[in-house]
Length: 206
Image 1 (cartoon, rainbow, N blue to C red):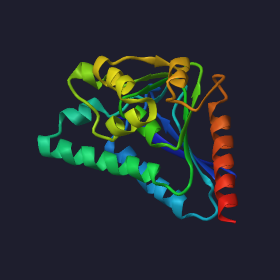
Image 2: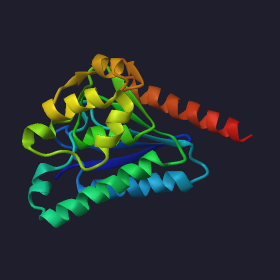
Image 3: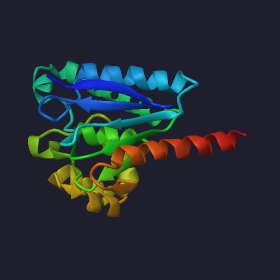
């Protein structure tokens, strides 16, 4: 369990960076808790326009920590799923824009996290999948609802059932991501996206 959440600020935007020693951040409960708290703070802070969530060069996130899941009783697993849903809802319902800047693998619960964001910017080396079906499990964090709404029921079912992996181009073609960028440009493009959405939101209120 070596995932860390590093918080930095670029002017009016908060940058959430998921880090880990092996380059594959996992969404442990303590990380989910910190994300939820920080997203709530963004929503309440008048000096912030929004947030960008990103990961490492190797992965945005590979999802839940499997060893952590394996230790849960059925009732604990149900509660963990409900808690994960509350975190994703906090992001999706944030009055401030939250954009995912994705490099490398975006898998399982990591894909759920990206789906909860208001937009997804993907680098050319991104890979998207929900491999839980191959492990006999399926997400409980809202991805089964958000993915079909975004790309259609048939395509979402194929991803969930077969573990199909989508390249950045495939994800863009299916409408899963908003834009594709060069490898090192996803974060800067996501920041521009947050500023643009925040500006439109302010204009609509005036």
